[in-house]
Image (cartoon, rainbow, N blue to C red):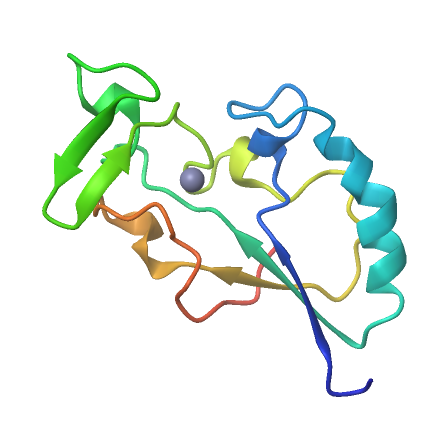
Length: 128
Ligand SMILES: [Zn+2]
């Protein structure tokens, strides 16, 4: 399994309890994730990463509300609460994640207010 890569997607504070887009019982993944990390030599963690004025945030559209849908040149966009803003505590990796040698894949769109909720597909950087 030395060439296998384990990838975890967007295990971030804003998706945990108290976060801006919390998922019920998200913390239940931490023991599993931390255990699996010990089994793999290569582990990648991605981060959802938005500019503060991201077009996918409802706050960027004064007449709209969270979960409204808008039409963009790239297609339909669901409007989300502000979350995982670049550099914010909410964008940080979950506090209960095992620390050590961790490479983080972070999308380059995180610094520009471009449409596209999938901000994680660009090559990653070493961080956090
Ligand atoms: Zn997002």
